[in-house]
Image 1 (cartoon, rainbow, N blue to C red):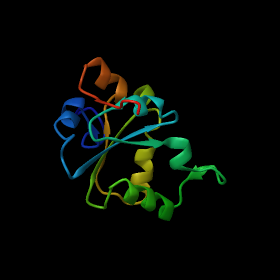
Image 2 (tube, helix red, strand yellow):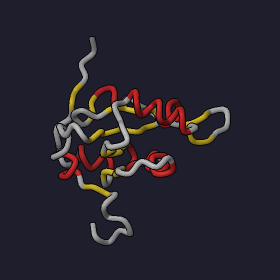
Image 3 (cartoon, helix red, strand yellow):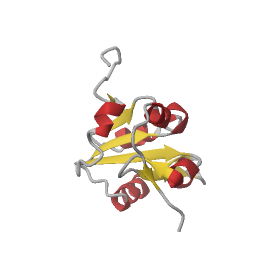
Image 4 (tube, rainbow, N blue to C red):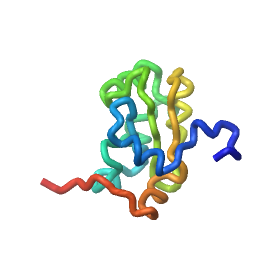
Length: 131
């Protein structure tokens, strides 16, 4: 991935597969429609709804810093966490990465090609069974 301006930010699906049990890493699937996440997702990933959780729907802008920090805290993300983001449609809602950067998070990464690549490679997912 040396052709990218900041290759340290973009991680491979292989890299992610080796960090699903890393207590320092927090995988976050970001989508507008979280139906896919609710059915299955990468092991130990949490799911965020881009519109409902990452946007201030009154100002039509990013969440304010306090609300963003609250969301991160509730999701087990601390200042020293490595955050790995991924989602549907080749990471359509990867602008969550910019929120982390904007609010000063030091270690945030994006899984190259998102959920589609993970599924095409037939990597393991955590299935959620209806109650």
